[in-house]
Length: 301
Image 1 (cartoon, helix red, strand yellow):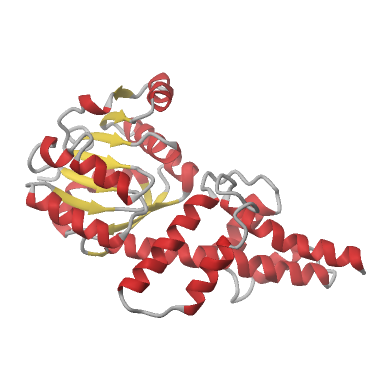
Image 2 (spheres, rainbow, N blue to C red; image 1 turned 60 degrees about the vertical axis):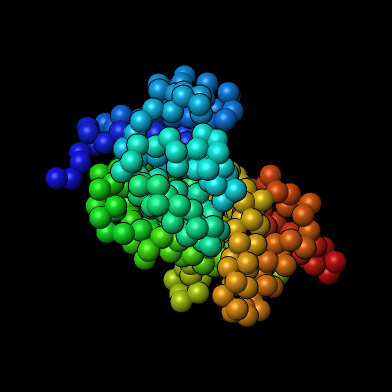
């Protein structure tokens, strides 16, 4: 019998902007949620918002351990050493990795998880902190049907759309493909808008035209009006994280023996100047120096 939100117990490991908001969303949906983080400040913040929090060495037994961590290395650490879920998690519980991780490492860790009598699901997310807070994330699922069915009440509470793309590691492969396209579209859209601006077309008008045609994308429809033209740059996703994901995409292609010259060009473009934008800047800032070229060119005329 499928578990309901009232019977499925969850522990969220990693209470940053994404993990913290996911934990609060799941709590509001009626789940029994415990959160933990290696940083005292993160635990204190979430506790002040009503979440039950514990230190990493005091994890409770749970049906699901939801990981929201920066890199594959952190996922490995949580599973193998600190707190060591492979040894500590109750047999039959599910490890759900929402991080954007190295697919090869994910497949290796999935095998270890299943060998330990646990279940694995990679479920990288899109939608940023706002999507995590509203339960409107997009999720790419890599795992078996039975595991997905078991945690579906949780997935439905977190997401607007879940897409099952294959077995363990597949979710992370598709997430890297998605982020590669996102990174490329930020550059190409910025160049298109800069070209139009240099020709005297207002950027907003240019985007309205693009979005009525075949060249539109989530970048032109959402990112540019929401964060670039508004100059808010507060999406919650940093340039450093996008650079990390692009390197992972390049490494995945190299491991597959697949030459992708445009991918390499996009990786290079994001790494050419690590001071503009810096790793801590919002990732939409990659457009800033490109759009500035139109202004500079106008000033030189």
